[in-house]
Image 1 (cartoon, rainbow, N blue to C red):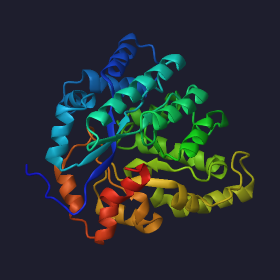
Image 2: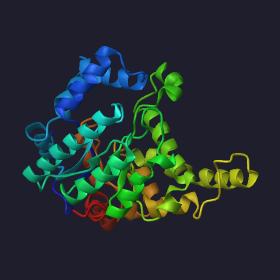
Image 3: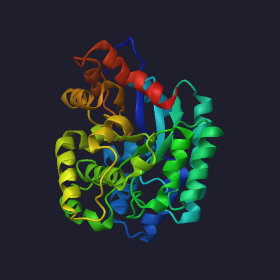
Image 4: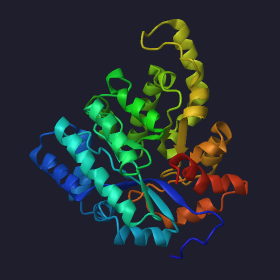
Length: 347
């Protein structure tokens, strides 16, 4: 397969997964010991770490590599830079103290990788939301000392959502450091996953987007962006479909506020649509589909939609060529592939 042709822009992929080998080993122990009451985690990582399919072996082989395999795949696909982030569920499934320690280990490894390959990698900081104050300190350390460019949140924390105010020191720290938070999918928690798991719709095909889209809406409707108006939240997979629901989300939020049906649904200082246009950034990770990209650019602005591949989960070189060929203004395409990432991550 031929490498995508050079373009007048560099291709910066902004949702690219990684995990240290020691964390994958910890996942193996959790699965083998059957100690985590999380069917989504057990099913997903049981497949990736023990499955014999070509997909499972590809993901395990590529996930921890930050040198030979990954750089070769980037070269073959014409990807000039990856923004690396700890894959789901990250440290969210670990006990509190262990999660805090593993997050530091992961961030130190990513910092080392960026120093080895500064033209190829940037990275987001992993945190342990189980300890919000420690997470806030790790954001500060990772940005100020390691030079990391944002924060990765792998959605819910053992069924808890960050709309709960006890987690808000995380948002305060990210806003203070002026770095974005990437809200990445996690397997739906036990309370949600049952009907999806029984028919194979729990993962990236549907369940990830449902779970993460709901989490993003919980953050918006809880008033996170009223409290932290400069905070930037990134959503992958074309915004977990939320841009295509904006009309109905705004209409029904107004109706629900007016009905006074739910104490948790209160007026916001700005509408959901305004929050999306001012505080939400979208990547196309895993969705190499021109109509969806152009629609989202039209609704939110061409400056709020970024390119991502979703490596190693999705590694399809022809998708790069498809997106290079999109029929859109040259400035918008350059912003999509390169300019927006440079601005958002200060590359």
